[in-house]
Image 1: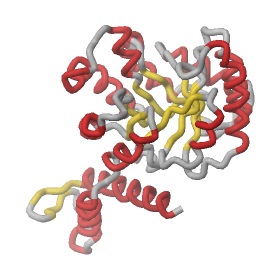
Image 2: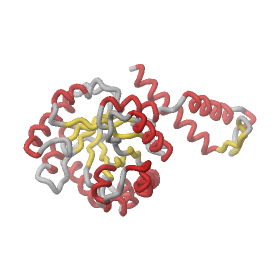
Image 3: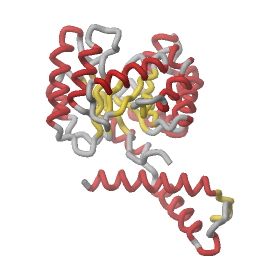
Amino acid sequence: MQASRPRRSALYMPGSNARALEKARTLPADVVILDLEDAVAPDAKPAARQQVAAAVRAGGFGARETVIRINGLDTPWGADDLAAAAAAGPDAILVPKVGAASDIDQVSQMLNRAGGRAETRLWAMMETPKAMLAAAQIAAAAGHPGSRLSCFVLGTNDLAKETRASLGLERFAMMPWLMTCLAAARANGLEILDGVYNDFKDRDGLERESQQGRAMGMDGKTVIHPDQIATVNAVFSPAATEVASAEKIIAAFDLPENKGKGVITVDGRMVELLHAEMARRTLAIAAAIQARSSG
């Protein structure tokens, strides 16, 4: 069973904006991604790096996961970003423009040599045509010696730019790539987060796309504005009916007469052990969300 830590919403916050970094400590996002890449102008990147590293070291983010998105290692800032992030010790480092398994191996090795704390994971931005064609190999890098890879993050805007595919029509053109990345992630025990919805004032559109992502099997969605968090959190939280159904399945399998059975009947439908495993994950996620809300 995969981890039951909620990652419903992952909010990008510009690393050059001190006020935004402070606000990130109070927002109900499950994950805050402190961005040194797209959200920061070239001349502001060194100062943003210091500011983000200091913010992570200072803590105060509570149960929120802290993730630093570095610049690519092929840029003038990437290596210094990685060194600073390793020293700061976030929950994860998000690597942009991953195109091959060797990229994951390289960053993992550099992070290990830099003395990054053992708990710091690597997340991979899947946002290029190369990444789509190599998704299975990139995900499989999680099993390489010393690898820290634990999550895919879809970069649908960059993918649209590079492929010239449209994000319209319910992301029809993107669907094969999104599902390829999801299958690769699941085959290798990785979490996966959906890409952003650009019109942060369009709540109905955000809800539709979030529902689509959840139906596809995504663990959560990246967001670009605090106003998007509540909608995304609601969509990716188990509904009360789901929790009740999960509890009923677990209780049914625990009955003495069902001990040792692989298939039972619950409310007139056949339920297998795999459904019990899914039910346990639903309950674990629901409990983790409840604990976070109460904390």
